Length: 206
Image (cartoon, rainbow, N blue to C red; front, top):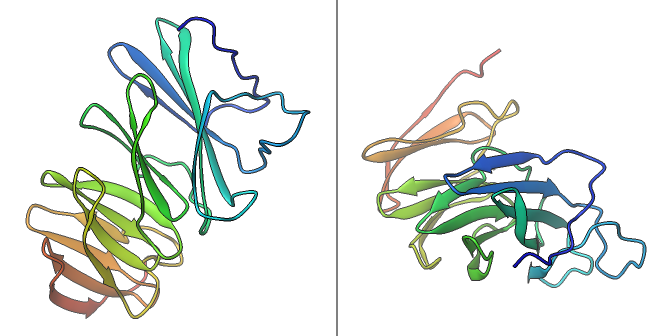
C-alpha cells in the first residue's frame, strides 16, 4: 500500500474532502493524456465511460491515509464538461459518488475500486443529491433517479435545458419533491416518482 508513485501537480486540487481517516483530493485533468510519455502525473487505475479517445472529461482522484497516498485513479467520460463542485461529489454507502461528464461513477473507499458507472444524462451531469435511500442527478437535459446500485429508476426531460443563465437556484431537493428550473425560467415541481406536480414561470434574479 505504501509504494504508490505520487502525482506531481502544477495546480491545486479543485476539491478536497476530509474524512475521519482519509483525505480525498479531486483534480481537473481535462488535458491529461494517458498515452503521453511526458506525463508528470500518474494514476494507478483508470475508469472510462464512452468511446471518445481522448475522453472529453477527466477527473483525477487521490486518497490519503495518515498523510500517505494509498490509492489514485482517473475517471473519464464523454458528454459536456462537468466542473468539480460541492454538488458533483457525495460520500455515500462506504464510497464516493462523482459526476464526470454524462456519467456518474461510484468508487469504494479506500481502494478507489469501481463499483458502478451509469450514463445519467444525454449531455452533462451538473450534480448528484440524496433522494431518500437513492440519488437524484441534476443533468443538463434530464433529471434522473438512480438506486444505490446505479440503476436508473426514472428520467425526466424538460422543454429546455435544466439550468439558467446564472446557474443559481436552479435545482433543489425538498422533503417530498424536487424543484428544477430550465433556461426559460420555467420552474417544475416534481415528485419522487418523476411526476410533475406543478409548473410556473419565475423572474430571473439580477
